[in-house]
Image (cartoon, rainbow, N blue to C red; front, side):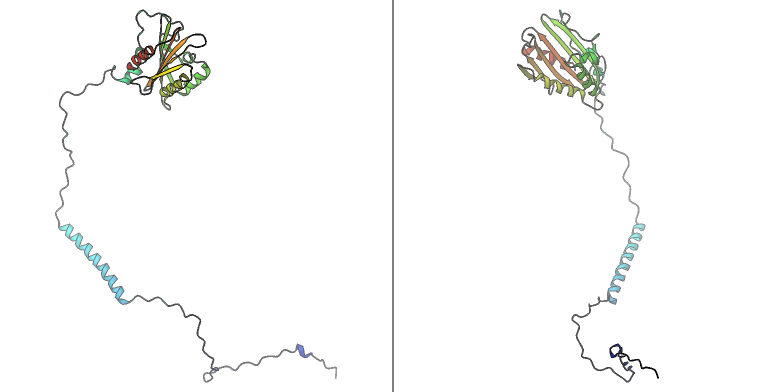
Length: 272
């Protein structure tokens, strides 16, 4: 016979014996009972029959009440609706008011000939030393020439929606007077009030200046200035009403009294 193969004992695995199956007559060995650390969560209580009956009765009560309401309303006579007519308004006694005349309606007045709103030249007045405009009108280029920087003034007035300007001017001895009314379209900007506010700014920065509010104008101002480098005295007034701005300039070789510039400003504003 051949050699016998020897198998090491370590490589032989022990096969566990099968446990006997438990039959109906066989019971497992008694194991000690262990209590769980925490009991099972309690189940919610099921709704009882009484709650269901109460809910059904409540629904039936609502339905019955609604039906009863409809039956009661159907048997009632319809309510009378209020009258649609309005009470007669008491008419004011006396004749109906007349429409405003052209002189009373400011819109008609300022949209007409702007030159007619300017002060009239005093009797005996002569032609001003330095005159502007043509036939009492100033176009934008001519109006801009009144400023020390005409190009900048031109652009500013375009932005402020300049419409037109009327001018009157005269001489009285050594004194020259110029009054200008500027009108603005004021579609997107308040050109009249903005122009006057800008004039306040420059007037208040002149040396040797006195100023006064113009009565009846809200924020209109009058100024009297000392002599300039060339020996000329000046006074000015600025105010606005609606879409029209007012400028008054007075020049003289001697001091200009407050009464002169204030009188011109008040009388001119009365015409607007």
